[in-house]
Amino acid sequence: MRNISSVLGRLAKSISVCVVLLFAVTNVSQAQDAKEGEAIFKSKCTSCHAINRKLVGPALKDITKTKDEEWLVKWIKNSQAMIASGDADAIAIFEEYNKSVMTSFTDLSDDQIKGVLAYIDAESVKADAPKEGGAEGSGGTKDTGASTWSILGMFGIIALAVVVIVLLNRVTKTLEKVIAKSQIAEDANLHTGADSRYLVFAKNFVKNKKLVFFAVLMIVAVLSVAGWKTMWEIGVHEGYKPVQPIKFSHQLHAGVNKIECQYCHGGAYQSKNASIPSANVCMNCHNTVTASEHYEGEISPEIAKIYKALDYNPDTRTYGSNPTPIQWIRIHNLPDFAYFNHSQHVVVAGVECQTCHGPIQDMEEVYQYSPLTMKWCVDCHRTTEVNTDNKYYDQLIEAHEKLKKGEKMTAAMIGGLECGKCHY
Image (tube, rainbow, N blue to C red; front, side, top):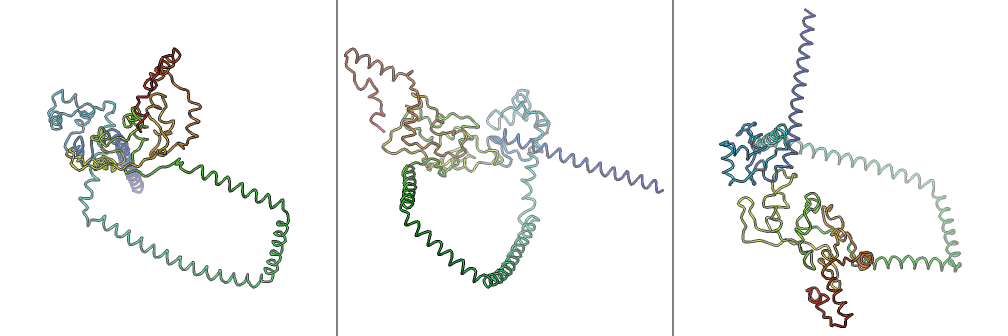
């Protein structure tokens, strides 16, 4: 009987261990699938879909409860193929959303799509959790308990700190009395000796005229250098980085998404000023791109500021009648007596934006990269070769040839009709 009992006991333990391992492996597998699905969802889906709200496409909460998983996998891979095959559900969705074509994700495997669906299921459960618990559920009780223990712990720490401070104060006073009694005479003698030594050194220093002259000369030199450096830095705002009303990331737009500079700053190629784009230029993308991976499909707070400035309702996709301008803060600002023409440098000279503005494609927040001093500009002009392969220099050479022949040359022939010659 003992052998049978021991065998059954071992068998029960083995079964228990297998069940636990199977449960753990299943949970880990599901967690890994959901984690991979989260990464795919945030990189490929959030521009059109959210869990709890309708964007370009429908809200995805509990989508696996309304549609079969196999059907969803086929739909996500190639929705147009399902519509063309005559699938009734696919045609109904296509017509419901004004025949908007959903992007096909043929690059995703079935397992990856199932991971995305697992992530959507997990987020759907999270969305339902507050409604089930309610304001008076167990969550509120736990928060109250944690808060109470935190307050009690804080008072306990304060009381302990007061006791320690009182004890240290008494010990310190006792030690001070002992030290004071044992070193009064010695301290008095040392103090008198030190005073006499300092007095002798001061008298000898004053009598040595060469040493005094050298010391004064060094003080004057140090103050002169410090003053010169301070005056040289006046008006130089290198590193200036103000807080803008909207946290626009050049690193994301120009770096990650590789948007060309002239898309937003077209004035740099056409006029003196680079110009700041209007909010309507932003809406060319952000009327559909409303969120990033950090907000899980919800509208980004910074994009919401653009909508507010334009009085735009993203739900109805309509504009109101009360738009307000965005108060951008200028970063690069030359003195009024300095003239700089963007188009002349960018178009004629072929200067890259990064030459003056630094690695703008890597800046999360834009700051003044270059000092923009006259010396900095002059040093650049001394080393930059002139590109003569343009119409302006062709006109200039033609004018010089006419001068050699004794013909007249007008101001218009050397760029005198350019707007920038007279108008800032």
